[in-house]
Length: 553
Image (cartoon, rainbow, N blue to C red; front, side, top):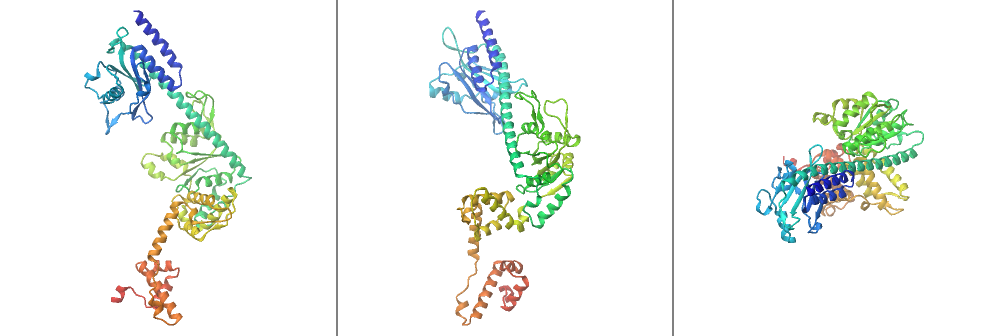
């Protein structure tokens, strides 16, 4: 009776201590050590679900007779070939939520104990009785497994099975331990989220301060490089919305400068004195993005120790730029739609909404109509956002802007890194202009910045200063050109005494070779020779140049 009372008192004392511990590692160590005391187990282990929910990982070990460091069991896969792993005792307990009490694992064939057998052989230990108890939180979800090994008889010091009376008390203990673990994990998670939020806020504040320093009284959109027809069309559309509050949806490939266009809209509008607040919807997980956009009240969740203003409220009187809107979770899309419809926002934990006055500029590289068909984007939100759609052209459609862009970035980074760069070598310039740029303006900008960093002060940007991918493409082009370059037979010069005849034969040889290279496509050959098609036809007539098949017929 006294032993039972002592066990109950131990149980109460332990559960009280567990409820106040927030350090997850210390908590797990306390749980496994306490469980061993309560059950008189020689050794105890705690398996915890990893972040993927696919594996059980040993996170705490306590042992009286063996070094805890020796228990380096591999993670237990919950699924094997897509099927539940019911052969491992820990995985079985996780799936079923049932306690398992095995008197002697060497006489039991229901589970595979290969890892324990190997441990016993290696460390000369003898594992006999095992008690596996699932740790289930308040939602009755298994978050880990408590595994107790070898109950020791206090009188004989021999290994004995765990009795039924121990099963009842260890089950109650596991319930309290699971709640403590769940609370500690939630507290740690919220702390990490708040740390990330605070870090993001500091970064955002620093970026806004830098942006304000760069901007004087007005942001002149003509400073955006784009003299070509494609960008002039964009500028024409921008002029029509500067004085309005219409919601704008910017489309186009990644790297086409959508945030720069959004800034242009803001700083040329009547909201230019307000904040320009930007958020990439693909950069944060759903719960963190919701807190970032909507903010929260103190006490809204564990770890929310003070009020936090969300970006929507922060952009009151200004512009909110939502980049990659197509990647916003559907649940948040519904809340954003309400903000646009009702012109109000309610922070997490708040009882009443706040009226707001913002303009939203959204951007995406996705086809939102296809996302709507797939059920990944709300149709009503799409029509709320696309009041005034603007599609930004890829760099491949802006070849006429390339010289100006190259000069702009060269000047920008030369000043930024205090270098006097004379310009581009002919070879590097040709590579930069001919490159395809799947990353658009961002890729071009990065290539020039890298080249400026590598270039010697006072020198020219050379081919070797460009990214390796560009150099490889240029090398392949050179090899192709060498393989297809015009070969002039010795007879072209040897058979003619006059210079004019030699030049004519030389020209005829070049024309014939270029036609052959282009499979006798006259338009392509003329483009490569940089002459008009009529001029090519005239030279073919003059030199009597015909395809061999034409000559036969």
